[in-house]
Image 1 (cartoon, helix red, strand yellow):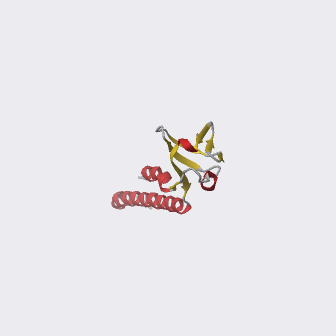
Image 2 (cartoon, rainbow, N blue to C red; image 1 turned 90 degrees about the vertical axis):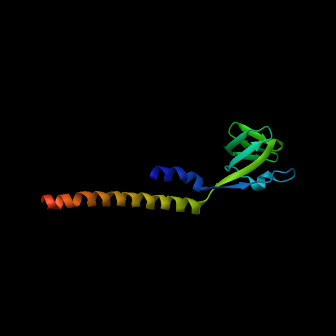
Image 3 (cartoon, rainbow, N blue to C red; image 1 turned 90 degrees about the horizontal axis):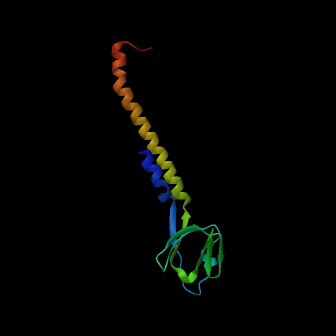
Length: 121
């Protein structure tokens, strides 16, 4: 159960914001260096990368430069602090509850046998 909850954390902690990439819009007003972007090009490539710098008509990542006129859709993915805190707190509570229940069941199953056998303090 904890593995499933931890695996879900990245999805719970990010939001995507679509960016208007029409000619004449300023890319630098919407995309900043170190933003994580996901984009689709007109030739069907799907790219996800961290922007190192923004040019007037291109986004530049490590070993990658994508011209504005090649971009069909563009989204900036952002970490949501409130969602991250809720996901981490919820995961901690769920793991704690599972441990509490397991210990409770073990004590309930073994306790009476220990009492009846006289093994105890």
